[in-house]
Length: 402
Image (cartoon, rainbow, N blue to C red; front, side):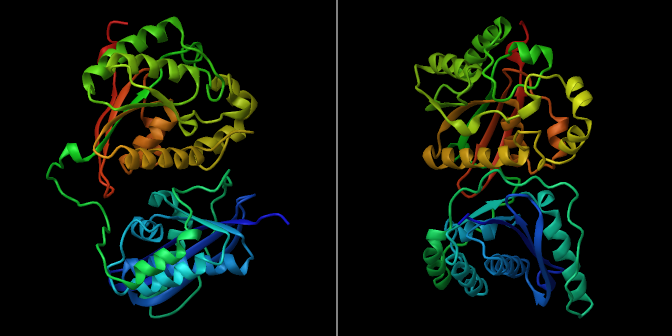
């Protein structure tokens, strides 16, 4: 029997915190992206976090009703995602029974994965929750209906940093006992100590013939051009000066990146280069090797849909939403493996743009407004509590003489 996978997008909120509250949950078929169920309810007076948990519980319960075997949960509540993954303690007594209820539901599935997403990528569930809050404010209970987005690209695989199915007991145990609740990164203008952060030196590979010709260059293994090789030499010297204490160089498996990474590793001091397949460029599918004009001529409708939504993939390709998920997994692994250390990450324009977008909590419009040069360098600090500082974006002064 085929495994049924359901995507749950959930949200909740209150007007006043506490105040009139409600939640919304949207369930999609993972194979098609089609909306298969909605849940929404006004819950009276409650806090944002209570409403968010209620949205999660409603979504999981609906997935169980649909007979799902595996579930991917996407929420813009970092607190709920981190607590359900077992990384954050649940200190607030009002949340513990809700977390325990959610954990019990998680245990009914073969696998459940949790992913944090920015709010602007959770608009359908957010609209349901807001309509429920309106109903709560009017002292009525309603189940509003919101039209789903016109274009939805189904997930190519289950995302999220860790499966929660096997950790349901741990989450439930955390819910029963007080602890330290790291609800969010501290908000402050005070500079944070950089020595406690994992510093990521993000480097785009040097130029290739496709770069110069303005062609979509995804999974094709296009080597560096002669200009790209000169850029790599300059970039290696710049990164060695910028991060002489780097402890690792991580690279996309494609040769234009590994050649860039090897030059940097040698310049720093013969560091080993480790390949990570999840740093590979977006799969542009049928558009690989074609110019923008050629794609516009042959796939006008598909191109418009792709430009309008990060959830839409090129024909036979991969969506930016899917790329963002795997890049988030890479960043989390590096944070765990190299606490307080500096790591050089050599990748492609799409993964680096998406990592910077999420670090800056920007909207998808950021992807179209940011230009990243070949062999450009960006610097990003990440702290264990979720704190982020973008130090620089697309440094290119080392390329001035090329």
